[in-house]
Image 1 (cartoon, one colour):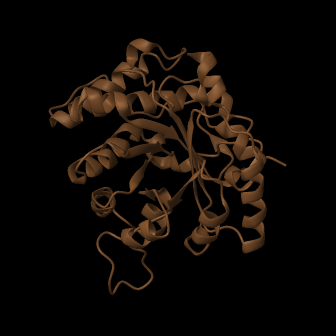
Image 2: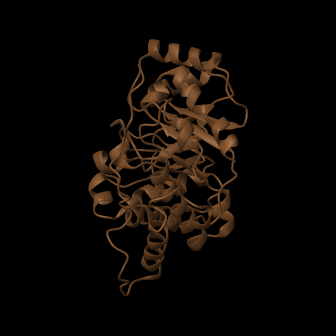
Image 3: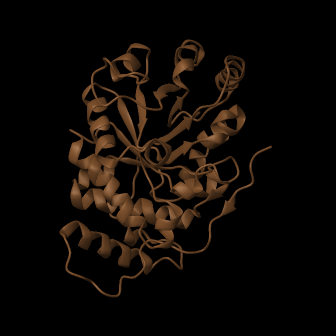
Length: 308
């Protein structure tokens, strides 16, 4: 049975106040500007006028299997995915636990690419327990998830370390799913933009190019909790992230970079989320362990087409 989603409390949580501008750095001023601009629209359907440039990018759906599965359960999941009818115009990746990557690579349809859940910051060597980018490429991985909240807040990886890991992965030819997102107390304190922009800056300071990066906005309070940001709340942050890219990187990068949403996405809520202008797909946790439901999420691209 699919988990029933509970929408989060009705607050934007973008910033506590924007009535008084203080002397600050350019990046802080930009954060305040975007926050104030978006809060004007928080009580009604988001308008295209608040979006720097809405995306027309190819839909992207990733399945993060985390530390789940056995040889038998993964065999069944791969079988379900192989038999599923998937919309053609979606990039799909799955991220098995390291020990099952080879099994999945050898049995999963070529329609779906393989991602790792983590990689080391440099070339392999005497780093017990780590996995190098070179090893991931050797077994057929095309992507790696970096900056996931569980790596940040459980393992203790900081923004700069994550940025360096992303830079090395990209330099060696892996695509990066770059995760950002705020904790509940940060949203309630009005720091959503501050946190997300700081995490984005750490990537921007390190990476050589944004060509093979997909940004995944995953509010920490929505990951695995059954709570999910409302479509409007998710759109607000996605629009702000695209504005940040436009102002701090380039309009071309802002337009071309896919920004996907993660946080208790399932077969019941994906269609409404997919309709949002700046949501270019999903990074899915628990629901990606259920083949038919994951297929439903992939195929929610049809809602995107209708909304467009």
